[in-house]
Amino acid sequence: MAKLTIGFGVLLIALGIFSYVATGSEHPTALIPVGIGILFALFGVMANTEDSKKRMLWMHISVTVALLVFLGMIPAMVDVFRLAHGVSFPYPAAVESKATLGLFSLIYVLFCVRSFINARRSRIA
Image (tube, rainbow, N blue to C red):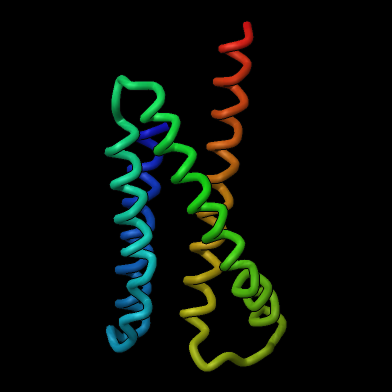
């Protein structure tokens, strides 16, 4: 899961750079996913250890942050549906970028939950 976390961080960094370029490089807030991606890359590096307690700690921190990011992006995900139905937004690229960040975070949380369940089952068996 540590490698998945690093990959997720790289994906968010790419999303932030793409969003920044898509908005004409005028809005530095489009780089917010880059900061979040750097956090996840660091979480993945910290979780890439043989010490199971540290690995578990960093993976739980990363999934908690991802869940908070997802919860924070729910309004943007709703706005994407509104955008698709003709509602006008001043910065539609920002709405799409935030919704993508929320979707990626949800997918990451689901992968982590599945991994945590499998780890628990293997410890019990």
